[in-house]
Length: 158
Ligand SMILES: Nc1ccn([C@@H]2O[C@H](COP(=O)(O)O)[C@@H](O)[C@H]2O)c(=O)n1
Ligand SMILES: C[C@@]1(CO)OP(=O)(O)OP(=O)(O)OC[C@H]1O
Image (cartoon, rainbow, N blue to C red; front, side, top):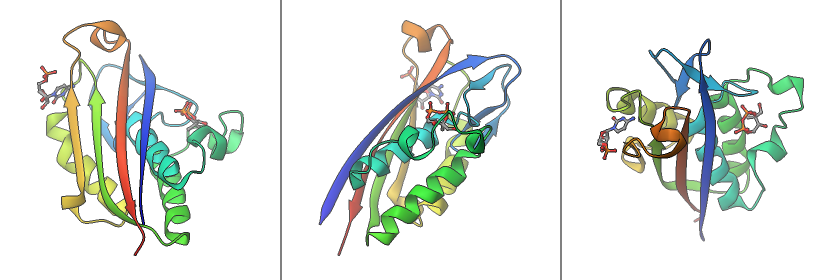
């Protein structure tokens, strides 16, 4: 059986926070605001996996009202959701994601992000793709007010 899921997330850029995207801390003058470490890319992938499983969304599993998830490492949240996929007999087909950010430049960090995501989803690097785009200075991402990410995940059960 093949199931697909998609995920989308946005976090605000603000001073005094680390800029953690795809598990990589990117040197930048601003970082992402959230209850957790606000890793917008891992949140989109987590939601895509949950979508494929038909299990709701990240906020249902890890509520932002719960102190247990304050400053949570989003990689751990993705790993916990991946356990749910494995328990149900799924393996990753592929995961494709796009980071939508005017700045900072993501390209130098994408190979490391892909390795981190592949490890979390127990997949080969060839099954993971991460892209980045600006919005040509348009909208909230274009003004540098926030960063968005979207992901699509395909899960396969033999
Ligand atoms: N934050 C970003 C945005 C884009 N990139 C890379 O630049 C290429 C061109 O982006 P456009 O939005 O002008 O099409 C894009 O394909 C990415 O490779 C980036 O690294 N970081
Ligand atoms: C991850 C959680 C939990 O710490 O908090 P945030 O970092 O605010 O992220 P969001 O994308 O709003 O999703 C769900 C949350 O419950």
